[in-house]
Structure formats: C-alpha cells, structure tokens
Amino acid sequence: MKTIQFLLLILAVFLCANQAGAGEKIHYRIVPGQPNAHVLHIEMKAPVSQQDFTDFRMPAWRPGRYVTQNFARNVLKFHAHDENNLPLDFKKIDKDTWRVQSGSSKFVTAKYEYYANEFDAGNTYFDDREIYLNPITCLMYIPGRELEQVDLFVENKQDWPVASALNFEAQTGIFSAPIYHELADNPVVISAHLSRIKFTIDNTAHEIIMLGEYWYDENKIIADFKKMIEKSAEIFGEIPAKKYVFFFHLVDYRSSHGVEHKNSTSIVTGPANFHSSSYNRQFLGVTTHEYFHLWNVERIRPDVILHPDYSTEKYTETMWFFEGGTSYYTPLILRRAELITPEKFIKESASAINEYRKNYGRKVTSAAHSSFDTWTHSVGRTPPNSQLSFYLNGKIICMALDLEIRQRTKNDKSLDDVLRDLWLNYGKDGIGMPENGIQKSVEKIAGTSFNAFFNDYVYDTKTVDFERYLGYAGFEVVHDLKKDSSKTYTGLQLSGDKKQTIISNVTPHSPAWKAGIDIRDILIAINGRRIHPKNFKEFVGNFTAGDSLKISVLRKEYLREFTLKLESPPDETRTIKIIPMDKPNNLQAIIQKSWAGKINAN
Image (cartoon, rainbow, N blue to C red; front, side, top):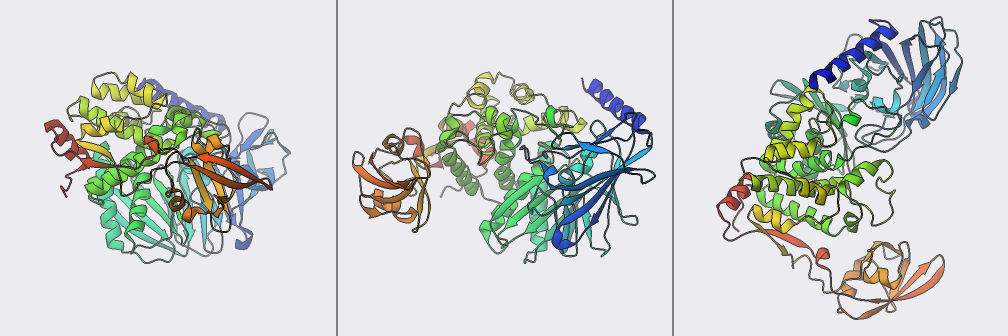
C-alpha cells in the first residue's frame, strides 16, 4: 500500500510538470504598499497548461483551523495579463475562484491587492513594523497544480531581518518550496523589530523569533525549550525537520493563540510577563502543544487533509486525537521534562476532569461527531450546551486510553507506543492515515480489542470512568471540599458586572431550566435583592436544597419573575481532586511512577 501511494504521488508530480512545462516554476511576488493602508500587491506568474483557461483560487480555509474563513474577502482589484503584458479576460466563477481566459498564451500572470489587517497567529498582517505572511491566507493557487514547484519574492527595500522555515536565498530574496502545500504551510516574518535566538538539537536547527519589547531570559528559554524538545522527540525517535522556527508575538493583552505548521509554529501570547510563574506555564504550554504538532497532525495526518482541496471542507472524525491528544501530551511532556512537578501535573489533570464533568455538551455530541462537525460547529457557532471542544474531550479520552493500555500490558506499552507506530506507518513516509488508523494502532500495540472503549467514548457520549482509569495508576478521585463546599444547585451561569448581569447559560434539566429562565435574560434581583456575579454564590449559599427563590429578570424589555426551587448539587457538578492511594499494589505503583512521576507523599 505504501509503495502504491508513493508511486501515485510521483506520477501526480510528473503529470503536473509535463502538463505545464518541465522545469517551469510558479512564481509569486509581493510588494508592500503604504503601511497604514495594510495592502500587499501580489502577483502570481505561471506557465499555461493545455486548457483554454487558467483558474486562480484563494483558499477558503487553512490547516490548523478547520472552519471556512473565506480569505477571498480580502482580495481587491484582480486582473491578469499574458507574457507580452496584454490583458486577459477573466470572470469570477465562485466565491474563491477567478477564471482567466489564457488561450494560447505561454504564461499568465494574475495580479491583485490583498488587505492584510487581521492580526492573530493564523492570518496575514502588514503595518509599519512588520510584514507577517501566512501564505495559505493570501497566495492563490491553480487547482490541480498544487504539486508543482513554487517560489516567492517579497520586496524588502528597507532590508529588514527575515525569518522563515522555508528555504531562503538571501542574495536574491527568494523563498522556495517543492510544492504549493509546503509554501502555504510556512509563515514568513520580515521586521526590523524581531529578535532571533538559535540553538541546535539532534542536527535540527531551531530558531526562536521574538516580536515585542518585553524582558526575557534567553538562556532560560533555550534551556527550557531543549528539555521540552528532547522529551517530545523521545516518543517518536527523531526530529523530522532540518530547521524549525518558533514565532512569538508578545502582546500586552490576554492571548494564547498558536497555529501549527509543518516546520514552524506561530504564537500570539500575552500579557507577556516572564517574571510571572503562571505566564511562564502558559508560554511553555502553548509552545509544547504546537511543537508536538510537528509530528501529530503535521506529519501523522488524516488522509483527507494530507494534500487537501482548500476550496471545500474536508471531513474527519479524528480531530479529538490530533488536537485532544496533543493537549493531553502537553502537560505530560512538561512533567517528563521536569518543567512542572508531578504534583502540578496531577492538579492540572484534575482541573481538566472538572471542566469535562461540568460541561453538559459532552452528553449531546460525541468526540467523533464534534471532530466531523468542526466546519459548522466551531466555537461561538453552536447551540448552547450541545458541544464539548474536541480539544478537551480528546484530552480526557487520551488520558483514559493511555492508562487503559498501560493496565492491559502491565505498563509494558503506552500511548507513546501508539504514536510511534502511527509515525512509522504513516507520518515518516508522508502517507495519510485512514479514519480507523488510531484504533487499529491501539489494538496492535495492546494486543486486544478496543471496540468497547472507542464505541463508548469516541463514537458515543458515555462519561469517562475516571475512578477506574486513575485507579490503574494508584490514584483516587475525591470531592474537593476546599474548592467546592456548595450545598445547593441552580444550573445558572452569570456574566457581566454590577451594572448589568446576564444569564450566560442555563444547564438543561437544572432548577433554572425547570423554572423557565433563559439565556440572555438580564438578572435584576433574587428575592428582591440586587444580585451580580460577585455576590451570587455567597447569596445562594445562605439557602438549602428545597428552598425557593424568586428570580426577577428583564427579557426583551419586559420584567419577568420566576420561582426557582433549589436542589442538591448533582455529582458531576462537584469539584474533584486526585490523590494517591495509601497502599497501591505493585502494578499501580509502577504505572503511577511511569505516568505521573514520583509523587511527594506530603
């Protein structure tokens, strides 16, 4: 199968080259306009194929964010000409595609302006301090010719420093890639304000690019990154890149947005304060998550997005593993690298479990379905209480999966072995993973069927049995009375402040839901007293289960009153903590030390 897929790929490359003219590359050129206009002038020159027309298409989505984003909305003043600079007729045939009547022309050049004024890790941005390119968002492609060689020139009159994982020839200013997919998946930063940190691990050159004037300890960052990288690479046995670049935009507002790329990651993080232990944990966490994607999703990759059509959705039920699994390994790697303590790892695991338990959406949509529906059910686009992020759902499932494998194999195997198997069978050779690849690999490594596990937790909505799985590692799950001593339950979530308090969520089948209270109601008073998010918990704590509260709200400019009968908190709403067993058996002790590290008895 591997040989057939490899030969088909070679054949596709040959046909593309033969069709358009062997040796001819597709060339891109970007000329920045006036910085405060945020406009990039882009041209794309390509040899003409045998067709009478050439389609130029802007991607509708980007890898790492499986939602239609319609980057074509930023395209202005499209036009085209031939090799003699004679204009060619064109017509826009859909939301992303411009069809140029290239006829007998040898070459066709498309020109357009691109409005680059969305600053985040996944977009293209241009101002008087930097040119930040995410090529997938701004460079068109010719459908069917994505496997042809490409290069890119960006005019840099001010001779600003340049950073990218792409091959770059400094003398000519040209970036090159063997195929469009490689070019599209490699950001470029050109800025007078970047700082560069370099180090090498296992013959892989690493660069850290910092943008933002904040203090940091370069030596500590290098030391921490090396530990994290080495523990990540241990799982797979190698670092499959000659060069890897970390791009960091350090900002003064709350952000932890990272985007993975094949040989780099782009991260917007803040408020940047390297004197803060909590910020350092956030900084290392998002960095570790994105670096792990170097293997998990960038190379071990669902077949449907290996070399995708960027104009249409590509559906897979496996994102719970690629994003959720990566989320699971983030604190695990930091623990192995001794960048967090075993106690911190267990505490963070308990926090994730609490978040999972208290989210009603996990009962409605399975991990597989939320992976599949990401195109239409992204954050902010779903009915309330209908989804649990596949990041968190997958993290919890992968924790249980790891512990189940360890239990069945007496800790001889773990989820590490599954990842290594997927790497050797798919990622290492650039082969797309089939939809059933994860379960097949798990069963191969564990030597037993995991049908029940996958049916219950991946394809259905059964609650993960934490007590059981953590018990394998010699831990108990208990109610955390210090964090949660509540004796009543409303099912209400509030947002806002003293000036205006909004009902942000009502849990289905809760007392608030039964009373008729609705999302977006404006809370006026409870029992005649002004209530807001800061005094709500304390006020309700004065009552007991069975008591009734008079809830006054504004709904569509009308004052409404409801009677809410308090109930005892359901078990799933209670905050839990994880503690080591007093007397674990031999296997439990072995798994505990291997998985969580040596736990301090105190």
